Amino acid sequence: MKCSRRNFLTGTGAVIFTTGGVGLSVLSTQTVAADEASPAKRYGMVHDETACIGCTACTDACRDVNNVPEGVSRLEILRSDPQGEYPDVTYRFTRKSCQHCENPPCVYVCPTGAAYKDEQTGIIDVHKEKCVGCGYCLAACPYQVRFFNPDDHSADKCNFCRDTNLAEGKQPACVESCPTKALTFGDLNDPSSDVNQVIENKVVYRDKVQLGTKPKLYKVPHQKGEIS
Image 1 (cartoon, rainbow, N blue to C red):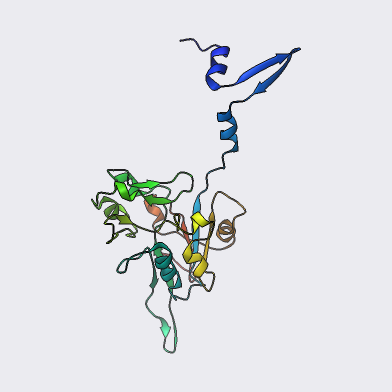
Image 2: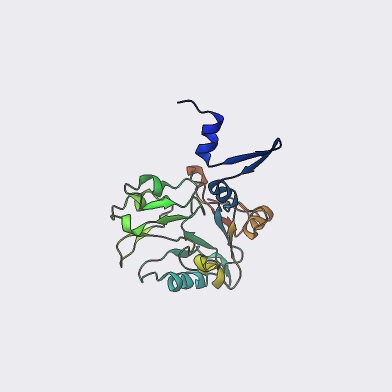
């Protein structure tokens, strides 16, 4: 089938009017809609270990806002062994939660499509109605942050409060509740976002980057030195 200029214009829904040799184009509604569509976001987070005091207000807020059952958690604050000698003892606190990987192993191994990456936000999430409880995603996650929800028996994890606070135009519950502002959240595709300002102006690291997962959870190290 030949694709003439007329056929092409007809197929795209564009109409060309010519008056006195001057062309006036009327674009299809599909083209206009595509032009007006908002660009995709790529949400990420920074946890500043130098500001975290281990109060776990973030974990409590996450549980309340997202109705996370007792016995499981979407995020944890891990405390290091004591550093220094009594009475000058300090601790290092770090966040353990979904990394929202650019290359998510959990998504690649899911046989039903329950685990997925939202291309409009970069958030890794779960279609609970598709989850069959096979546990492949739990086993594939190198960060070991997925769990089975005891109430609905599907895979569960942090989704940056996508269905709760984010849907209401708020920051994730953990960010809003942090008393020391140790958490910064935003769009990594926006050069002027708060999260990018922190990444550009502070020393940061990411967990297990050697695996090629490209995590979007960054951390400001508690102290200088080698990061394991």
